Amino acid sequence: MVSIPWNSPLESLSLPESVKSQLNSGDDVPLPVQWEIPVFDSRVAGLYQYSGRLEMGNIQNPDQLQVMLNILIEDKALPEAIEFSGQEFPANIDPSTPIGTFETLDPQDNIHRYALTGSSEDNRYFALSGNTLYWDSQEALPGKTSFTVEVSSTDRAGNTIFETFTLNRLRMAMEEIFVPNTFTPNGDGINDFWAVNSA
Image (cartoon, rainbow, N blue to C red):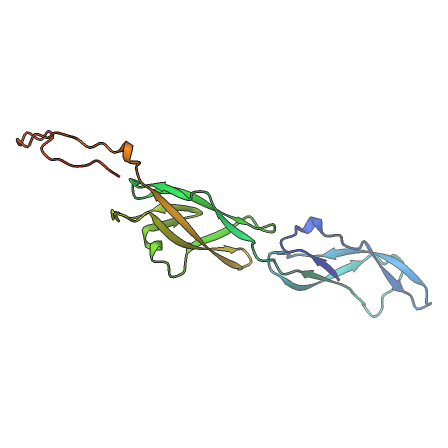
């Protein structure tokens, strides 16, 4: 039996180069063996059995005894956590503008599939492409500065974890807001309306 971690490359296996065999005389002799492993996918946990070809030399094998090798691919551990690179975004952001990227802390796998999940109503204001989160709304949402998104990350073994993130939409500081003190409502298309330019 050889036990290996999930997703171990075939060349990392330490396979026995010989097996101890007992002859009819009662003597124990080591016989070299060539293992036949035609298919090997260490991303699928389970117990697999492979046969080997003994190099018998002058030794006879009338019963056609075979040597077998059991390889146990261990279950993959769950990913540890999801991290997000962008906790804040500007209020005047355009739709389809990236906000940040997700990354999964996972010692055994570096490929993950992300999705907006759960029951958070704020998920509808965002979109995911790969591991990048985008603002995806035309709504002004006046006064709303905090958003909660729920995200899942699934590894190649099918393990899924979930995280909830709070994102803050930044507002302009009062001193940055320009308030005009005059306007000319004469229909010439220039300064015809008075408004506060605030994001």
